[in-house]
Amino acid sequence: MVEQRQQPNKSNNIRKTKAVFYHAGCPVCVAAEQNVAAALDPARFDVEHVHLGQQKQRVAEPEKAGVKSVPALVLGGTAYHINFGADLSVLI
Amino acid sequence: MVEQRQQPNKSNNIRKTKAVFYHAGCPVCVAAEQNVAAALDPARFDVEHVHLGQQKQRVAEPEKAGVKSVPALVLGGTAYHINFGADLSVLI
Image (cartoon, rainbow over all chains, first blue to last red; front, side):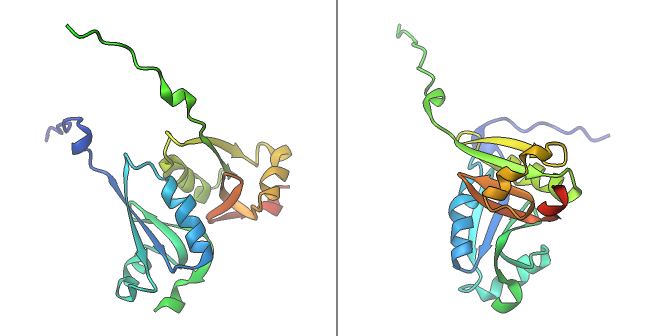
C-alpha cells in the first residue's frame, strides 16, 4: 500500500482549486462577476476571468465542462450557471 | 525581551455581508451548496442555509428578493440562481 504523505501545511504550498468565471460582458455577467465570482474565498480558489466575446477561441473549454450559458462558474471542473445572460451558442 | 501582546480581535469588528443559500434538498441543490455556497469567503460573508422544503414559512423571503427557483444565493439582497433544481412555486 502506498503511503500518502500530507504536504507541509504552509499557505504558500496549498494547492488552490481552479475556478473559471466565463462571461460575455453583459449586465447580468457583470453583476455575477462583481458579486458571486468576487465572493469566492481567495485562500482556497484561484479565479480566472474569461470574456468569451473577446476570446472566442476558448468557447470549447466551457462547453466541454457542460456550460450552456453565461455567466457561468466552472469550479473544479463542474459548471454552475449563475442567472442567465446569454446562450453559449450565440458566442460561437 | 520583547513583550508579546495579544492583538485585538479585529475580525469581530468587521461587518460581514449576509448571504442566504436557499435550497430544497435536491441533488442540484446539494451540489451547489457543497461547491458554490461553501466556496464563499468566510472572512467576508455570513452564510445562512435555508431548506425551503422544511421551512415553507420562509418562501416569501427569497420570492421578495427575486428568487424564481432553487438553488439560489441571495447576496446582499440580490438573487443569483445557480443552475436549476426546482421552481420556487412547487415549494409553496
